[in-house]
Length: 268
Length: 322
Image 1 (cartoon, chains in turn orange, purple):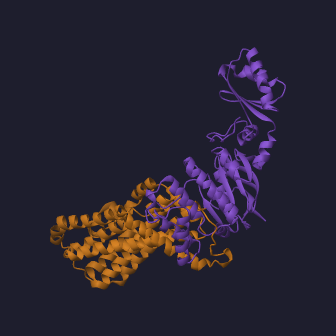
Image 2 (image 1 turned 30 degrees about the horizontal axis):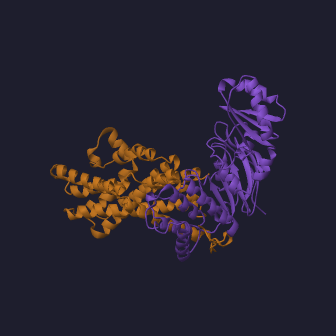
Image 3 (image 1 turned 60 degrees about the vertical axis):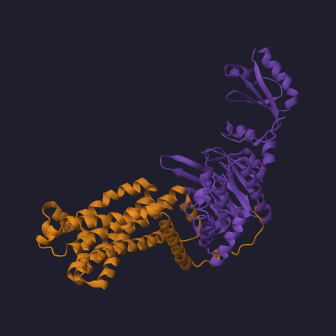
C-alpha cells in the first residue's frame, strides 16, 4: 500500500536541457546495450553469417583468384564480410518492440529530450556494430589474413565500416519509427539490398560488365569498398579513404534525415 | 488554479473520424475526476492529448498550469501517467525499470536508487524486483506501472482504465492505493473507466462521455439524483416488447420507458408503490412478466438516460438492487 513519501524531484524550472539530453542519451544507450546482451538471438546470426560466407568465399575461390592475378584474395573478401556484419537487420527492431509494447510511449512521457530516444538507440547500435566488425577482422587475421596497413589500418577499417553500419541503420530506425511494425522493418530491408550487392562486393570493377558495371559505378558503396580494400590490400591511400568517408557521409545524411523525420512524425 | 483546464478540445482523424468532439473540462486540484464511458467513446484519446502524446486538432488546454502546446516538457515533468496497456520493458527487471524512469525524470542516481526501492516496497514487488518483467503477472505489471508513474512525485496522475483486466481483489487493492494517494499525498487523479462501480467509489466528480462528447457531469450523487425517483427493470419476452412499452408508457407514475434487449427500464417516482400496477397492467394486456426489480438509480441509469444505451461490459454494481 502506498504511504506518504517526499520525493526530491527536479523541478521544471531547474531543468538543464542540454545536460539532461546528454544524460538521457547515455542512459537509453546503456539500456539498449543491456537489451542486446539479454537477447543474443539478434546478435549471433549477424556475426555467424558473415564469417561463414567469408570462409566459403575464401575456400572456394582463393585458388582461382590467385591464378587470375588477384594475390591477396582474403584481404579482398574481408570488406564484404564486414559489410554483412555491420549492416545486420536488427537495427530498429528493439524500437519496434518498445512501440508495440507501449514502452515507447512511457519514454515519451518523460521530460527527456525526444531526440535522445533515437540517439541513445543509435549509439548502442554503433557500439554493437564496432564489436561485430572487430570480431570478423580478428577471426580473419587469426586464419591467415595479411592486412597491408597493419594495426592502425585495422582500427581505421573498423571505424569506417562501423560508421557505414551506423549510417545504414538509419534506414532501419526510420522504418521502425514510421511503421512501428517488426515485419515491415525486417522485410523492407530487402529493398535496400541492391545498395550492398550492386557493387564490387564479389569481384573487382574490371571484372564487371554491362549494367552491373554501370550500377556499381553510380553506387556510393563501391567507393566505400574501394577505400576499405585499399587499407587491407594496397596500403595508405588518402584519396581512396577520403572518398570512402564521403560515401558514408552521403548515405548517413540521407538515412539519418529519414530517421529524424520519422521520429518527428511519430511524436507529433 | 485548475489542475486541468480544457476548452473545445477536438481530435479528428483522416476520413472525418471524430474521436473527441469539443470537450470542455475543469479538474480541480486535489480531486479525483473520472471519465466514464464505453470503449471507443474517446476517453483514451483525451488522456493521450492531455499527456502530450497526441496533438489535438483544435482547442486549448492547460495541464498542471502549463500550456498544452508551448510547455509540453513542463507538463511531462509534473504528471504521472499509467496508460491502458501497461507499457513496460519486458527485458528489464522491475528495479531497473524504475531506476531508469527516475533518472529520465532528472533524479540523481542515488535518489533514483532509493526511490525505486521505496516504490517497490510500496507496491509489494520487493521479492520480484530482480526478476525480468516478462515473468510478472498482469496484476504485478499494473502495480509496477503505477509505481513508475509515481517515481518523480507527480502532482497530477493520469490513470487510463487502471483496473482493466484485473481480478476483483487486485481491483479493490488498486482503488485503495489511488484513494490514499489522493487523500494522503494530495495527488490530483484523472482516471478513465468503463466500470460504474469504479467511478462511483473513487471519483469526487464524474464526466460521462459518449461519442467524443461529455453528455453529463457532476458528483456521482448529484448525477444519480438527476435521475429522480426509482428504477424498475422488467424482463418480458422479445415478442412482447412493443406492446409492453405502449402499455407502461401510459401508466400513471411512469416518467419514462426505455426499451432494452430483453425487457424495459422504467424511470418512476415511487418504485415499490408502482410494481403492483405494472404487473397488473401487463397481465391484463396478456404480456407475461419474467422478473421485476426495483432499484435506486446508478450511474448506469444516468448513462442510459443521457445516451439511450447502457455501458457495454460494465461490471455490475454491488448492492444496487432492493
